[in-house]
Structure formats: C-alpha cells, structure tokens
Image (spheres, one colour):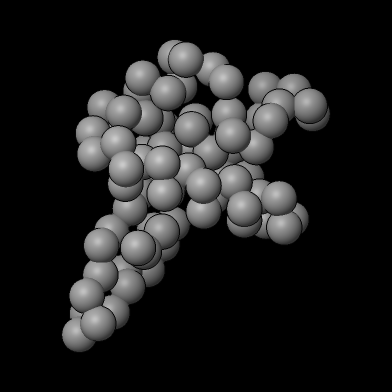
Length: 79
C-alpha cells in the first residue's frame, strides 16, 4: 500500500470508517472489472493503491444519502 496516497486520501475523507468503506467498495468495483478513473502507475498496480489515488486526486468522493435523497451524479460512492 502506498502510504503517500493513504495520507492524501485521509486529507480528503478524514472520517476513517467512511474512508475504509469507500476504499473497500471501490476495490470491489475494480476487482469486478470496472475501469480505473486514472491511469495506473504500472500494469501490476494493486487495486487498493488505485482506489486510494482516485480519492487522493479528487476523482472519487463519498456521500451519505438518506432514503429520501437521491444520489448525486458522477463518481460518487453512496453509503
């Protein structure tokens, strides 16, 4: 795991449990074949590092939606 990306992702999403959930969901999406939102450093870059970089670079955000609200469009993981 790239600690620089982790620290940068923590700055974007300071709530650690929320960050863990967002990263876990994104890694599952990448494992199922969804394309990364940025170019990986190498073809062997782990999906965990890709997800952390996506968050760190602001390509992926999180939103907590209540039942009465609809999810925003774009690259948002709704919890």
